[in-house]
Image 1 (tube, rainbow, N blue to C red):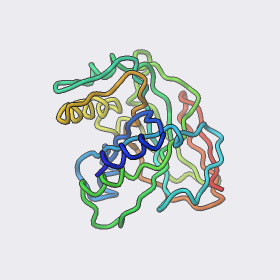
Image 2 (tube, rainbow, N blue to C red):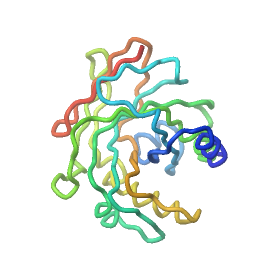
Image 3 (tube, rainbow, N blue to C red):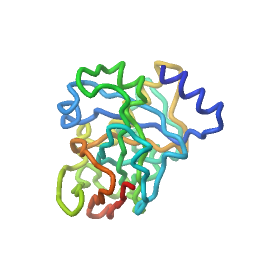
Image 4 (tube, rainbow, N blue to C red):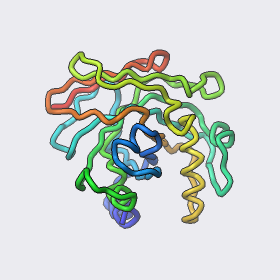
Length: 220
């Protein structure tokens, strides 16, 4: 189902810019009741820069997740891709907030449901600080997520499979099963290391990533 929808969007003129991985942390698996990762596709018209105003009505069941995104400098292909392989293929990491857009019932979902729903991906908001994975221990990048001035969620990126780039290797191996690979230049959104935070129209969202800078957005 996801592949059919993806091809329809590409035929309509949208440009694929990357992939998202979800349900990669215990926090998210406990929040959904699903015990394995899922994945989806991301198009160019879903990418916002920090400081953006985001149309609330463009999404359903609107929630925010705290993540790191990775931009690849080399293609990455399974079937035996490791964390070290993924780190070697990554150009840089950048803090990112994911806007969830779920079209299915939140209770009783299965992994098939979430993949068919494009892993509930709606949009992402990218920070403006690039982190070199060869110089920064990405496991310890923190996220302090606030809504309207109140801290709602906190976490560190090690919550994603022990290292946030582990998901990139996992996805490369998963794609190999379908005769595909991750391409140079793609953005890989690696999964949340906090629980999803519900937002409403008018909410101001801020996430402090310490050395990764701060991401802000507002829902209008």
